[in-house]
Image: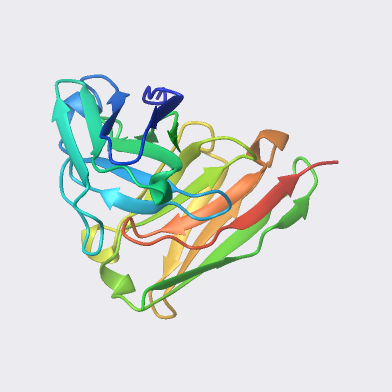
Length: 110
Length: 114
């Protein structure tokens, strides 16, 4: 199972919106509505911010939103803040009954 | 408060074995499908495997790189998840996290080196 493809880096200024893509295949992202997104600050454990494509866990800012079209899922961060600077990973359930993570995206707040 | 605390990491020689534990509290562990994820130094997240709740059959699935070498088990009587690792290779060097999906532990470092 190959890793899902994410851009290596995305940047934006405070207050702007950015979108991170996560591209897979019909055997993972495109085939199931089980895409999750995780935020990871340096030296810390990942934190779930989106599950089931577009649902937010309790306590996660509504500035984070998720969507999916075909084999590509997307995470949008609106009103970018300094604290959003982190690594972001997508994951998806697959037809092999395993999960697969994305390659990861480093978000920089300019 | 949900807590997941991994332990058992350390230095092991290539070809060796190691068992990681993950002590869970603050949620109904019995109902949870639990997952192990690893992260090699400076690299991204890699899904290792998952065990279903016993009510869902208690079966496990594994990523191809570890299938046949790693085994996940659980002891619901003490709210603990395990990862038995054997035939360890240098490529298995990573921080290993247990997760319920919603919550993650702090991770435990496994270093495979001669």
